[in-house]
Length: 139
Image 1 (spheres, one colour):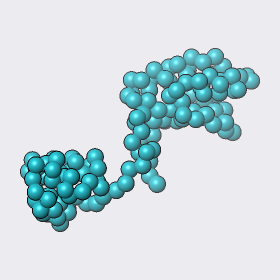
Image 2 (cartoon, helix red, strand yellow; image 1 turned 30 degrees about the horizontal axis):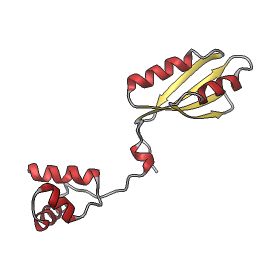
Image 3 (tube, one colour; image 1 turned 90 degrees about the vertical axis):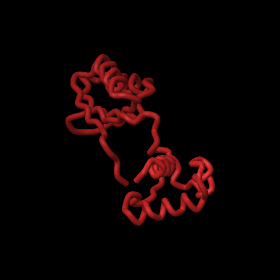
Image 4 (cartoon, helix red, strand yellow; image 1 turned 45 degrees about the horizontal axis):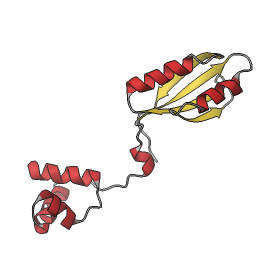
């Protein structure tokens, strides 16, 4: 695999549906060259397949997690309102068992995620929390 192959793969990662003509124009080579390169990369196993990315797959907030919250007393509705007011909190779920609420959180970086967790832990009536980062999602 050479530099041109690397550039071709990079372009296909951004847009796997790009036409051969568009790829050739962007790479500064002929359409036949792009076709031959793609065929060789597929036959050699360098390109194992093509896939579709949905809007949910290309989230602007790649660091995601679930924060389980225990609420002291009867403050669950007040805590839920405070959570819903935070732009990084995508959903608030009530539940049964050990945890009273579960917050789905997303941010751009681990550092900003940590700041959100700190802010949530400082909401009055939250007595305990546990957070799990979401590492991957399968469908």
